[in-house]
Image 1 (cartoon, rainbow, N blue to C red):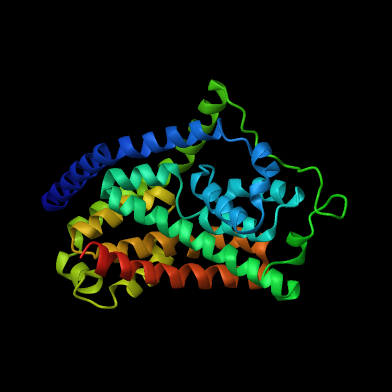
Image 2: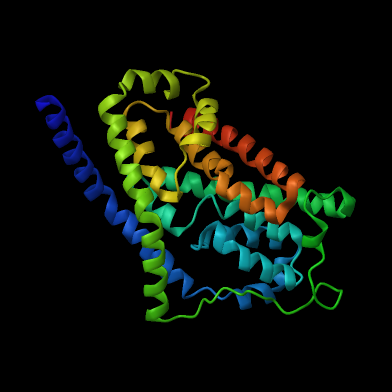
Length: 310
């Protein structure tokens, strides 16, 4: 009994220490992300002539990585862009990149892992979004029937020429009240996942020998990146709340390339994200999304872990 009580005290002390170390980046990231929602104007973005062809694909990927509202918040944006007649390649590039990184995750990642990992996540998200959009653009020019997304996404409502009034626009009006509303919403949503991540992190530190982690996910295992992609399916938590326990795994010997793979593959295989994207892209579209994301996750993991930071 005394041993169990001692272990519990040690566990709580470690959890408190880790929370105090990470919480400023978590809360600061949420604050900045909430501020961005008060600045962005989707109405201006959707009217831009730069949203067509390759510039549109690039713009879609950029919008995806700077959008702080998450994948669920992407639904009204997607509806607005579709109704405005924005090409499907632009929308797909946005949908691929938006779950992978955002201002909150970038700041959180930089604070915990350093800017090298943060920029690697940003670069990967942009590359995946641009690649997916370009594939859709090429298919659309070759044969519209070959597209992997539902025809409803190609034919927005309006006057038949791809023009119409966007519905379900995201209310992004600059105000202190709007900032506080967004900040409170994101904080309440992410707090349970943050606490769960802290618990998992401390449990890993206390109960899993570093030799086990290093053997499976260390640089000495040539399959560490692939294993990380597989483990991301059951272990990925919500957004930045995955960062603490991946940080603990890295401290225990996990290859940083495997960590990057986890960060890329995790959002792609999260059940809630898959369910949401399926409602937009359909079965073939979500298969395309998974194939692109998982393949790139493994490639980027090997590139980052065995070439960049070796």
